[in-house]
Length: 445
Ligand code: GUN
Ligand code: ZN
Image (cartoon, rainbow, N blue to C red; front, top):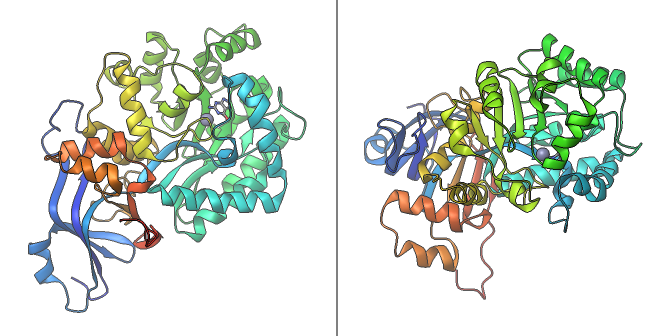
């Protein structure tokens, strides 16, 4: 191996394929190395393998970091999260539409201030990393500078994010709304500047059909037609009150999904957040168009939106990703998100295996975002974006670890009991961007 490699040693798990949702993962879908080595060269994965086989082949000067209790996984990916909503988390007592009006819109209005946007964007990027998340699809605000601020924060950390300026020209306070023309022009300018600049990519981002006029949706569709490789992100079928309102606003359209379809916003680069209250016709159309759903369990339970039917979506062949939806969501941790997804499935008599959950948060989400050639697994050539978890971190997981024998049990403990406290370190393109601070001396560690 080249002399300028770096190596990380520890238990290592990643997915090569969808493991399915049976108790045992599909054959060949996972690579698990109990004592593995991850070899990195120029920020990319060069190889993975058994430590005992690879170590003798390293140059004597190659640095090897040994994560003694560590489990190395690909960095988590979040397929739907709002950068400007950190301060909106844990807002009391409302469902979607009141929540937007009471808490979210006033908070997002603060992002017209360039310094505030910059401060929050850096805080957001650091918080993602502290939760083991290295990439994602992100809503900014309707202010172009919020997008600039986020991409600059991502770039400063070598992270690859996909993000966009929110397009919204009605049913919101004056300091948040744009116009069809300005939203098209600003989105166009930001897309040309950031899409494909380093690791950054742009997403055309109409907030949802209630806050966009037909003219704005039409221009969003036009932009998507001009840049088919850019993603499209919006919200869809989250809340019953929302759905009724859409019906009133677009009486000539057959369904909520048909609004997006009509304006040319449904394709395999489209990621629709939520998709809770939907029918088989919707599922069929998603399958036909290749549009994806971001399942946001902590948000759906926190806002009382409803239960996403994961099994039916899967059976219909829809590409489903997992997402935090902070600040509707209650945690940036994809471990906590997996745990809540499990509970949402249980409430409908369904199960979610730890294999499927960890697949979703890594390779599955990379596929949803069309970035699996770059991220989501530790196969050679991918960016070395990875997280080191400590499955016995803290008194609770440490206790549980004494009862759990198999890898499946350990993964399940992590997703049900774990969160950012289980994150030891997070690496982006081979560089450490987060290291858990040591425990205070007066506490038993
Ligand atoms: N629908 C429209 N805007 C939003 C938002 O900011 N969060 C959620 N969860 N749903 C939305
Ligand atoms: Zn959202």
